[in-house]
Length: 264
Image (cartoon, rainbow, N blue to C red; front, side, top):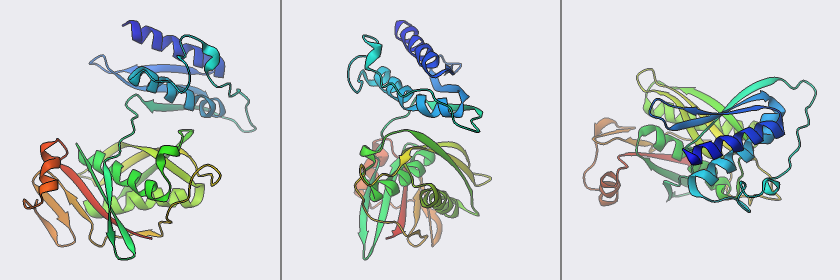
């Protein structure tokens, strides 16, 4: 309770500084689900990085500098200027925004395979996207300054994952946005529809080391594994039992995996 009171005070200070409303959204179990920012879109954009830092501080006890509660002046003064056409807006920043790195790469001739895993299928899908961006540039050097949303549909799970990645790649091509975190907002496996939000910033070659360009997503060799099932080009079948590393991940609580071949 004391920590939550202090957290709410920090949100109040953020709201006052950026002239917006910052409110913690609590679920029925008493846990914080997200932070809702309401105000002018420019003010939300300026406040967003600081809100993420506050979340990081209360989750891990770490702040990029000093304790913000001890001296509010250590927080970056970003200003609250508004631009022409600035509109009222609302943005939700998930309380559980964390740096997951549940992926690895497998070489494949001139291409690369991103292999990701998760506790849920949604988490595995999100980690494939982060893995794709990490191959372009190390996402550890990407800050959270803005977010993008994508939606995708498919005629099966493989097609759905393909279009999810393709949508994020399209956003990168048009807006140069790199996502450090990816949140699956909606995932309807029966209707084969997914909505995701990527948190990060526009790539800056002075700041971000350029990795390898991703030319296209492919469905060749794509696989999606569940606790007992596997979806691949060959169809749907049982999950292979002869992969020791995969079996270890299941035992560790990561029964969902995805493999995607990227054209580089």
